[in-house]
Image (cartoon, rainbow, N blue to C red; front, side, top):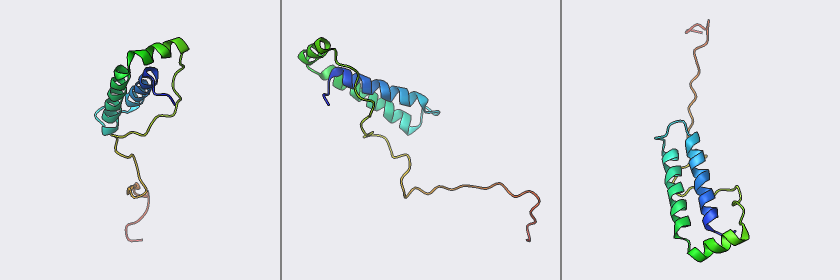
Length: 97
């Protein structure tokens, strides 16, 4: 896959869209996604002008939907992540039973 300015802009757009879907905008995932979007924008801006010209002449389509791994985001869950589930007390259950 060619890493063109439009590729990086599309990835930045995807990151921002995903970050907007996070309920708590202070969540580390949302923060990391916005930071990654900024990195992608910087990479797009850093591309040589001749790459952008070739890209516009060819009419390069948007990049594939698959996003690269999030380098700065903590893992959501791993196999070792303990998950605790609390159960509500049973109605009508006696404590001595």
